[in-house]
Amino acid sequence: MPAEGAVQPAAAAVGFDDAVTGFLDYLGSYRGYSIHTVKAYARDLREFRRLLARRYGSVRQPNQVKREIVMQFALGLAGQAPLTVRRKLTAIASFYRFLQDTGRATLNPARGLPLPKVAQCFPTCLTEEQARALLKAAHTPWHRALLALLLFAGLRRSEAAAITSEDLDLDHGQLLVRGKGAKQRVVPLTPLVVEAIREYLPCRPETQSNHLFVSRVGGRPIAGRVINRMLKRVLEDAGMDEQGITPHRLRHTFATHLIRNGVDVRTVQELLGHADLQTTARYLHSDTRTKQAAVGKLAAAFAASAPPKGEIPSRLSPAGQAMFVNGLPALVWGLDATAE
Image (cartoon, rainbow, N blue to C red; front, side):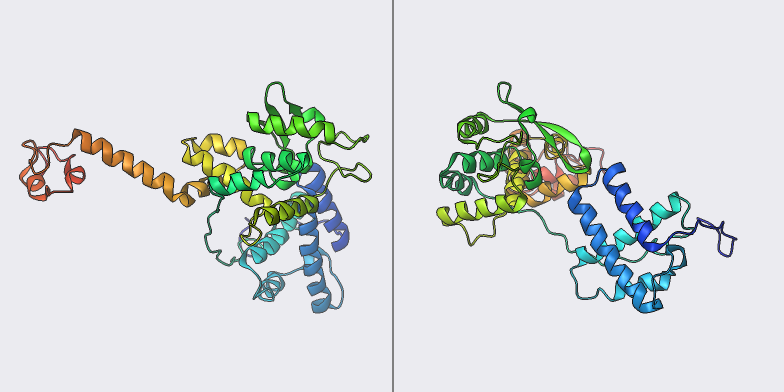
């Protein structure tokens, strides 16, 4: 970072709108961001542009925007959800990093801007009984195939809609998933999922599209909102429509039940396609049952090696013997006779 008061090299002049267009192209074509992320950044930068127009009477070049203007924009977002505010400020900061990297801005006025705190919330999941009830309520082959993929392959809604025939290897029970940021991963398919897809294929509308799930009219690939409507209908048939269940909650269910069954967090990260292990680690924090089972195993291991109840181990130091009371042997079992 340049020192305070240092002379900055001149930045190439560029209009705000042209700079935004270049930035969005960079996100989509070079960084591989999803169309939804690019659209969200575009909305955020349009909102920032409106502030510039009100403040200056016209939209200036990006290099002429001062930090206090970005802070004014941030303060104007008061009352919006903290995650929304963070995303909008992140969009501006990313925009200016791009301009710095391409020589069209010397400073980033959004760099290091204070962000609102976000309350930590952990994923919730369906119980095994709820998952079975949901599958039972799926009365059409495509409903069963789609639900099985969301529940037992942990797909995002957009990933399920993007599956093509080339991505499927039913003979070997594998699926190539095209995830966020143009990243790919291979997910194993359970026999239940393979069977559901095989039952759906003869019912699939005839179309030139190679997508697995297509609309009945026109044979076009389904959109995310179609998956939402499908799930809403199945939830109503299952009597579960008041429980706030979404496609993403089915993904949470997949991850949480893997953790509960002893799958290590790194493997779960790969199956979900998370770039950051911390994102996957949320499932460890949310799964009370797994934590209780882990503590129970530890207690059982200590109980198996501990002396009979009431018997004070002779190898404990006097301090350890004084601490050794009924019900707490595991807490002091590591104190040997040399401990002070």
